[in-house]
Image 1 (tube, rainbow, N blue to C red):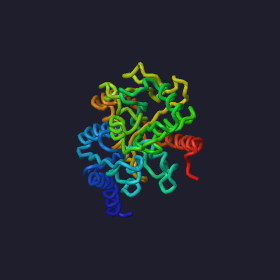
Image 2: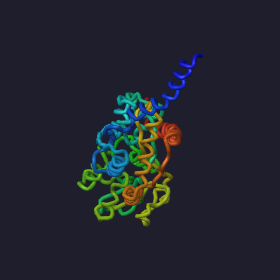
Image 3: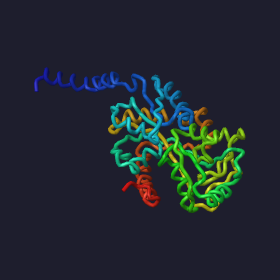
Image 4: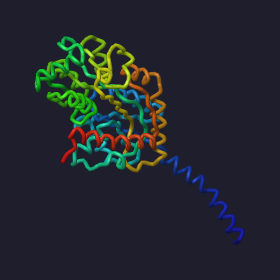
Length: 323
């Protein structure tokens, strides 16, 4: 090799890191606003918590995180939108159990909730409970269940959708007790609670969006589905304490389209992880009795893969899988 050729090779090799750095600088993520899909109507606890996160992450990344509420279809509008989105990190969505469960319930849904999504970060879970109006005749869950048993088909109850965690939790209670009643699905927690206050339904199985209304005396909390009693409602028993072996944990987090660049995933995960631990969000979780359960993408995906198989078996036992 001539000295000129060697010098050219040395110069070319030394220029490679600079070229790579230049490409990284040109492709810095994010360099424009990020769309965060919340697949529920505005006003519920899932919406409120993620709006706090969006504001914090916007400051951290120097780009606006724009919340896009896409309610309906039992909360899978975000997951569906991700099937058409570019895997560039500029369209992401809240993850929750209906995203995992709905493909099992609806054969027309062709996405696989494990392999067709990128798991970015698990953030928290949700406290589920059974609430009635403050002036309802039932002051305890056993009283409500006894009335339902004595009056088959008379009670109407609401959740945020067919196949939602709240729906299946209450169905498990009904099956364990041999009850007949009517489920009324709504578009979100806020809508369900408005229907309860308006007298459209007799009780609701919902996540902790009911907490402020319970504290204000508008609603009465009969029981919670969690393994332990809620900290702010220590006098309210768990469903399991009342002799019904139903415990519900509903983890949620952040997902993106299939095939995202791990470096982009890391940027988003780091920003949302930091935001989740900031005082405003921690206070929100405490007010909602939600635990902070942080898991990185691979661990989150592995946990959901295991849960997916467990959910399939539960739905089979409840005779809710389509033929």
